[in-house]
Length: 376
Image (cartoon, rainbow, N blue to C red; front, side, top):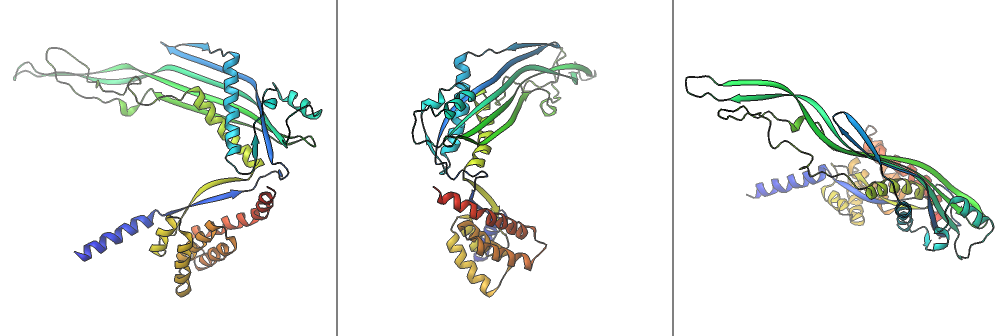
């Protein structure tokens, strides 16, 4: 019985370590020197163009209906994109966002640049303003796929002596579908107020597409139904239908939000210190207890165990995991030493080489990151 329990515990530890990962928080410096910028205001996001269309297809004939948006609806879209930029800025501790209506009410980038150049603004204690311009196209489609399917018809025998009749017929089947696709082009700009200067400007595009329903090989099954006196198709009544599908297309607001967030995150990474969560693999053949501690985020305790273990037996897996712990607490010098010792013991191990590569990049970025954080 004891042996069985030990075997179960060993298997549990093995399963845990076979897919063990460490979760680390990594800070990256801003690509552009914005150390003097501490407080930012977010201006308006000008509408360049918004095109929304609804397409239908029946019997091979396509019809397109433009979706006309009112000025209020267009402003709602503009505010939605602006909100994504504000969320990204407030999620980083680098900038303090100053909320003011003075810059948001400006209708265009030209109006903002004019106001900044003559210093006609009343808002105080703002170092820079972020504003943008967007172009949006979204198209919804309600259509039908056609396919030729072999449908099997069966009539059972009327008596034991007679033979039944099977008939296979090629038939055109209609598969309704719905789809949506979108494209967002977004220009984002940061302008310093004193002295007046455009510090950062970016223009990026993102696309989105999703489809539900339509032709699906798995959704058409030839199921035989034996019936009396009448021919009936063997096509299942439970064939997947777009009307009964649990899948739904995202709303316009969700599409716009996702596309804008992707572009805004890239812009914020250029101008601010950002923090992200990364997941790195743990060496599976290392000390079992230390693997569990690393997974739990108890890096200091894992370091104590691994330092004792590697002092007596410098196993390369334990050395790598020790380097991972030092990387997690920000001691890149000791992390580099541990990774290098592990790699020198097994130069062909890709995992150990990746650890060294990460540390080399972090060491290059560290001085710039420290200067930017100290400027706060």
